[in-house]
Image (cartoon, rainbow, N blue to C red; front, side, top):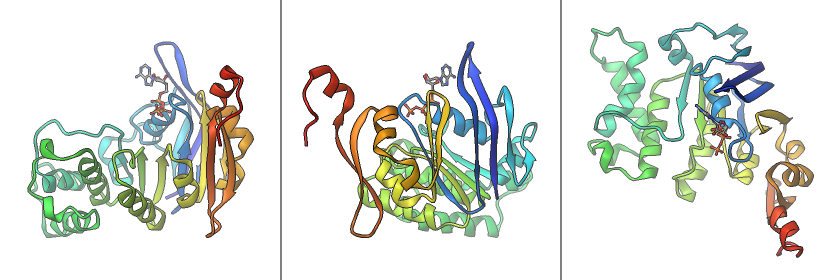
Length: 266
Ligand SMILES: Nc1ncnc2c1ncn2[C@@H]1O[C@H](COP(=O)(O)OP(=O)(O)OP(=O)(O)O)[C@@H](O)[C@H]1O
């Protein structure tokens, strides 16, 4: 499914948080959303997921504006894994993953055989079969993260939006998750703080700062030393690893360097 973000703006309490942002995601592409803390990534993701209604502009799925779509119709198209995803009740792991099937069932109908098979596949894909009966409140941060991603997969959406999905994961699970997202046929928009991870696994990057789009394109075009200094306030070198992937080597905070009057370490 193609996603178009067309000049959207969104604000709260008289403050504009997302300002005229425009970019498109080709069907099946994995796009990394990057930007410093507070730059508007989560707000933008919530607009794309249909959870926030932009004050102006439109979000389009395959050319159709999603404004006014109901929760079920949205859920059949897009799954959203939020940063602090939680559940109200203390469900078991397999029950949380099964919630991903609810948009496809009439309210009075129990889960069928096809639903069970899809939930089972999602549990296996995220290596959760061993903890399927554990209660949510007993899970570690990384386990919870993987359960929420399995729930999103069980939804079998056309697109998956994820807000910092790697922040609780150890390095193996980070690499495996990104590998899975890059390899899936679904369209993926993923907010990430790790720029090297974003560069390695994403087809395109979208860089935002203070609610505005700064750049969008292939990682090697978006990630420049100048932009990292201007937007993230860090001194960094952009190189390539032995496999040809873009790699970011940080020299230090450009702010601290200015404040102390000393050159950055490294
Ligand atoms: N509901 C809200 N009410 C008030 N301010 C909000 C609300 N939602 C977002 N903001 C503010 O909007 C700005 C952007 O927040 P957002 O969470 O979108 O940024 P982010 O890029 O995802 O940040 P981070 O990398 O720290 O997660 C922040 O200053 C935040 O405090």
